[in-house]
Image 1 (cartoon, rainbow, N blue to C red):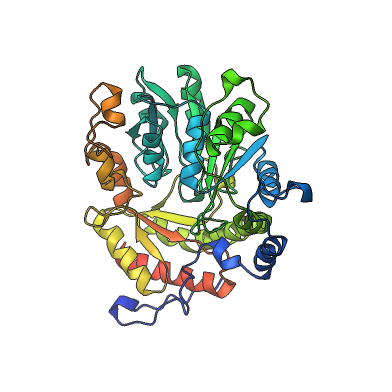
Image 2 (tube, rainbow, N blue to C red):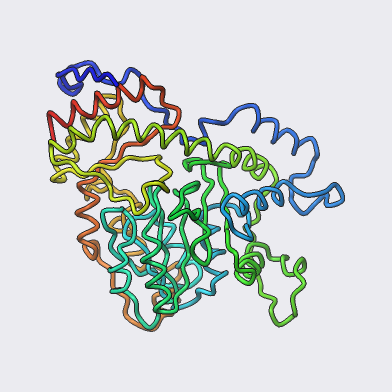
Length: 425
């Protein structure tokens, strides 16, 4: 690979290393073409927008999407829902989390991981992450109490959490494991696809995810009882469709996926393997091009629990200090290389627990109560309760790895990163 490495940084008036900026669309959004258009037209022309209408015409798109998704993940069951948050809520109902139950989750995740726990009356317990940017199993164990019901590892930025250690902790304490796979679709751990390792997996298909239906989600499990409970909760009338004894029937809400997003999802799911393969190839080239300079400057990379299972949609570097991380990210963006620091105290980002204002302040929807009051015990949060996580995130610079990058884009990115690290790291 030829690296030009022109000396002048773009922030100092030099020519940006990248001749074109990255797309602001996630891989699934970029890939939308005539196939998704045709899939939607097919649904409209059939006038079957609701999965449970037109049964006489055969299997619905949502039915097909569920079967294909379950097969892709390697789970016995899948349930198509309206969002990743809905998937988490249904998954939590599936494993029986309820009022007062504690769920241990990471300090770095989209706030919906915590609010889904609140939605079923549970208590989110915030634990530290480590250099994998996922749950630290040691801190998980430190946070287990007699009230703990489940552990929620979140596979952030496309890479798996330390599932072997997390499962070992869960087994010793008799806890359920609910995987938040919102950002990890297509990734795996030790040969098993994410979403098939814990008791239940929850995926997002929102527009910023690896594949997308615009909005949408999926619940996966190989436990039929968990699937039945999630199924009943996702559809207020679902118990009419299950052959269950009356004593097992539960009330539900409405998180059903419609036919048009399911039709789009079927097309997008067919692209997933190719998207991940393309991202892995480009990340490998990027790492090969910048690793030597990074080592010379004392820059390290994210610790991946299973490098082979990484979906490779991002590349994270650790700088020596938060100030250096901010300077490097600013300079990379000027080079037309999309980069961001994962935590800044002065910039609200609800991927970081310190910015979860309604959670940290224990705000309830009414004066009459809320999960913390129902728990009947003191639950304390503070913005500085996970100092190690904040320190890691403040030094982290993340680069998006766009699977659609050309070889020239990759070469220019290597040039820009090495130029910036040489000057500022």
